[in-house]
Image (tube, rainbow, N blue to C red; front, side, top):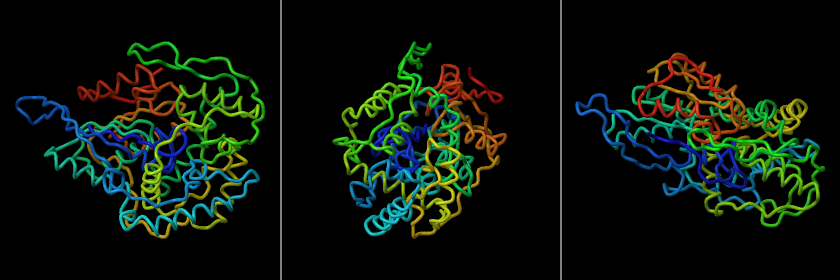
Length: 427
């Protein structure tokens, strides 16, 4: 089975729409992160029946210990609150445009030719070369976050090389927008997630164990109206100041997992009192440089992004008015706005052509990949897929922030090939 899941990234806890997030982020570079692969658990052509699963490991192209790419960015440009383009307090995006130009120029200058060959299509081709090198006719895969897009693309490009495909926390497959649609998903996620409604009222911490031993979330009291945060120094962080955009980024990251709610509540209280806890640990700078470069190359090479600052200004202003919590960030200029290379191939359009062997699992309240993306992917796959919707909060449903019903559906499919006959709602 091939698992596409997050690897370490820059300063925050979950997904960076562009791989330079934090530990456990999930965007193209980190989201395309470590991939463990094993042949299908059952070879139906074998007269002896099931064969033992053999583990293998693949690092996507550009990501160490594969030949690494590195844009040699300035340290300040590795901050997640910089790489995710939060506008200035007054809505100005001038600094974001300057950052996009600076990061793009550094990648052109320092990353070499390899960065031009990073893309989701090429990741899928690399995965199929691994399959062939193992001598396997088919592979099974479990993709999470960006891994759902990579898994969908692989299933479209190599449909008859797939055995059992599980896609968890699903990205919008819109071929005209690709990662721009993923960023925009934060707007809907911020509006629909009950996590956001609960931050000012209570924090979440591990609660009673489920039947499988996994702890679900429970609510603990918190300040109903936390004091208004005040900007101040944050030694050891990048940037070394806790300002409004850093707090927004930290909040967004923390809402990926209910287990992070208590720490978020403490940080918000502390910020309101003019004090801050110790800065979170981050991966080595060499790792951040690598995943940031891979993320930039993958996202910018997958699809053409607008290059006009006027387009971004208009979109950001509209987003700020409609979704004040995300302050216009989801529609702002990424480094791709200044990327000098045209995509070498068109994005893959996901369709219903191919075997019916795909299971989507999706939490109803996911701030990173809202359920709207899963519904669009389900529609695109048509008869090829079924959707397991889980009445739970957080990013990454299977064996993480979902529930026992959803976990059982996925485990049964991976272990036996028995998939629900139709879409399922797990309460």
